[in-house]
Image 1 (cartoon, rainbow over the protein chains, first blue to last red):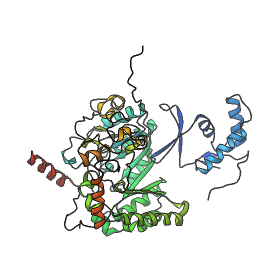
Image 2 (cartoon, rainbow over the protein chains, first blue to last red):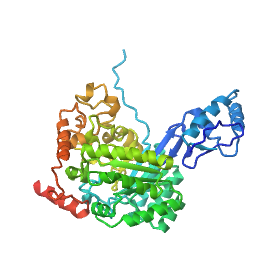
Image 3 (cartoon, rainbow over the protein chains, first blue to last red):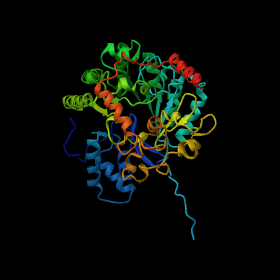
Image 4 (cartoon, chains in turn red, orange):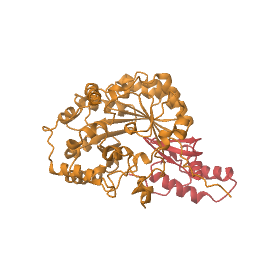
Length: 93
Length: 384
């Protein structure tokens, strides 16, 4: 059922309706909430997912991250994480 | 020179808040984990108390909130509480038998921001369902399942599994799929409270469990991604205990209907331990500072064989209530562990189940209910 094709630069991922993404002050982390459960995200995972709004393209997400963290060459890492996130059904494309 | 320092286990936040709003319940389940003496319970917390508890728990870092009971729908302020929890940023779960979930209430709960409903079923066969729950609720649950789906909630179905329904597990799974459940939790009964009274009649044989696991795996393959099925193995048939509540005072905070704060649903049974009440103390102090929450935190309390066990981190000595019920000592190793000197008590119960010695006729099931609860309280008073 899940799409296994590569995630392209023009794709517009969004956090799946099965999950709710929110910042948790007490944990100083972004978390994904679902029925009776929680995934605690590390900083990079949180920063990527919070930009997955269903409108921004992968290229835009990468550019925004590179600007926010004053770095370059993030695309491969972002795509690799998004592929993992899709496999976990955290995001829809 | 530095003085020797007592390294204090620093717990994380109480991520899971379980609000047991009431012990009142229209069902009379023989495996209920509510205390057997629930009829004795003092007044329920009022709406304002609960609103304060929600705010305090959220500030202390709680993120999942379960509204449970008893039957939480019997509280007519449920919508108010859900709305506040939602506003505070909780992920809100309603754990219900479905009795009382009319379409109007479902709509009000949706408007209040309820994220999820876990619907409990006793069985897929109406006769056994009604026998076990003592009420005619099965058709109603089908209707409720439809309501849950209509409102777009993800639905987790929960079915407590035991000797009397485990052989129908294929039909239970099929029914869950038919009703549109996304997750199905097949939770083998755990033996506390009412279930403990009925343990000999509810404990399945090893053969029954093996068959049920086999059937569950076949059904998983058959249905693929349509449904995710969790099969929770009964610990009496194991040789290592479960890490109860993922560790005492580690993630889980239960508030009972009268406001008592507990590290697990049944901890109130433990002797020599006073648990704080939210009427007297704020949630943060309860969680971090109270004796009730610190007593069995971490590993400092452990005795032999746990104290020197290489697996102590894995299960943290198992369940304190089970240790107390089977050995009389809440700091003993959980007798499910085959390193426990009391392990034979678990083995004997399983052996009785294997032999099928206990017929339901010979020892009638005890149905959960206020009258039975009062009767038992009176019996205890008579013994004093």
